[in-house]
Image (cartoon, rainbow, N blue to C red; front, side):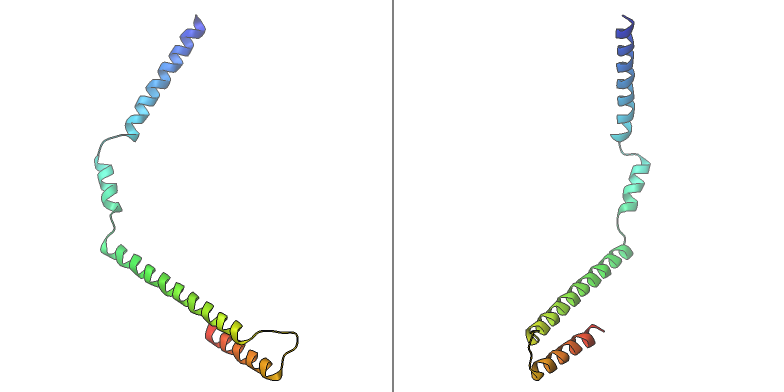
Length: 104
């Protein structure tokens, strides 16, 4: 009988705890919540900063694409082989030199 009563009291306390804590999580609109949502709205300065970051990222992506295109052109112009003629070696030197200067 004592055990059943203790379990019932524990269950009742657990239910009270759930009811009290759910009121906070499902609470209505209070001033703090309204102020927090108003502060979360982006202003003009934030929007301009985000746009400039997007432009910077787009420029970086374009720079990477151009670097990949230069590297592909280098691989096309200079195919390293075990035996190469003097003209092929000279063309590879020029290609690698051009690639190095372009990356500076």
